[in-house]
Image (cartoon, rainbow, N blue to C red; front, top):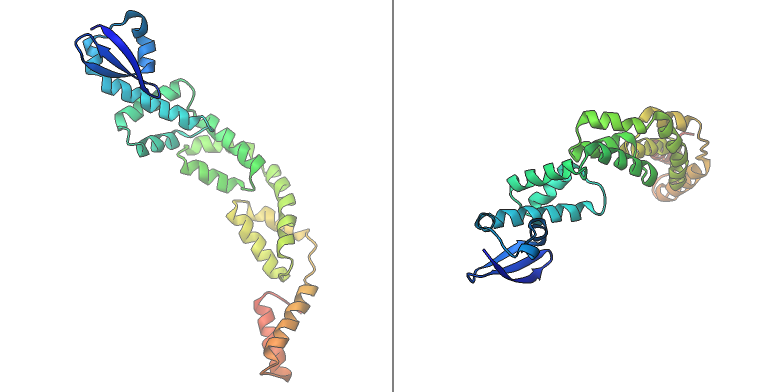
Length: 245
């Protein structure tokens, strides 16, 4: 079938006008791949399958654009294409094509993800592992790649992060400070034993905080209480906040 006219309609798409007055929308990659600009001919089999061929190429373009910002896991790309309402059969074909072209590789993705997390976030190994698994990376790949994040590296990061965090909660009792530190770094995915070990070497004086809290409680309760009853109430409240005389 002869092509008598090419008209660009939108990104990557052209409308071909045929000599029998029919028009066909064709992806530009299909045009280049089959040399339609030179031969100016298109066969009936291609015309019959044009929707599927176009959809495949358009889906591929969507996937490549999604991958252009950063590396993605196979699961991330698959779910992104699903949200774009692309048929499962086409998604499978695109995933296989991207894998064969090395655009998709969960091991490369995992290593890059871990390095980025180490260098640009405060997340610990357990949280990083969980995020990789949530993104569909198989456990055996995660295990292998997480070897990058050694216990020595974890301790090195914590030795910098723990003191910084403590400086933000200086008004707490030692007990409350310790609990907040342990909970904070547990949420970030760090080894509790390493955090506890670092806390043992931290110098923390809560005497000023104790006095401020005592004075505040005294002002509050002395309006209605006095003597031993007042002292008991203050001591009880201080105890709940983790302060010890």
